[in-house]
Amino acid sequence: MTETTSSITPNFDSTVDAAEFTFRFKKDKLGNQRKPVTLRAGVPSVEGIVRILETGGKGLELLQDALYDVVRGALAGWVGDDEAASQGTLDLSKFTWEAIANQPREDRRASSITAEQWAAFAADYQAVMPDITGKSAEAITNATIVYLKKFAIIKTNKGAIEALKTQLALYAENSPNAEEFAEILDLLVRRADTYLKADDIEALVANL
Image 1: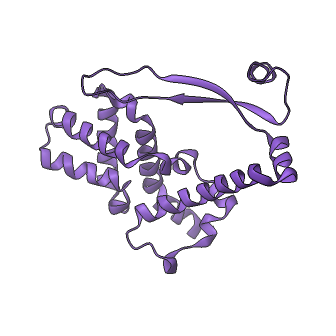
Image 2 (image 1 turned 90 degrees about the vertical axis):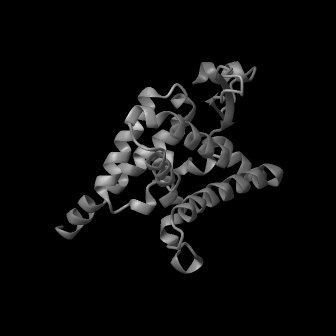
């Protein structure tokens, strides 16, 4: 990490850690696709965060904005999954900083997936899956509705979740555009696994 950080700044800076960022692009209307771009840049280290807290000013304001965005993102995921979400049904214990930190990384990043990306995924899924599965366009459309709700509307139906998880695997193997939606696919598979294991966890707790 010292070597990488040094390549970002002339001298080693203990207030900065090197991080890697990869950016992927969708195909344009002509089918052309820009290659992924991977960049390395510095982010505040633990020592850097302490320095920000001590210095205050605009740096601290930016840090507070970032903290706000993390909490808002966690709440946004819950609101998107639960149509009955309201202040009255909000369990604040699930949205403490510690609780959010212990969520799977894919779940924490879910709010960064834009509506346009979800729509593009749904359109591609609907375009390729009828031929792959032999299912009707209506059945494929219904599947995308469940995916867009991240399985929440069928969370107690393990059979349906298993079937749709299998279809996701087929999509990932056969769609030439699947790599564009890797974050969405990872999120959906993890969410499906969470719902599939839910009853097992409850049974374990009940028998402690």
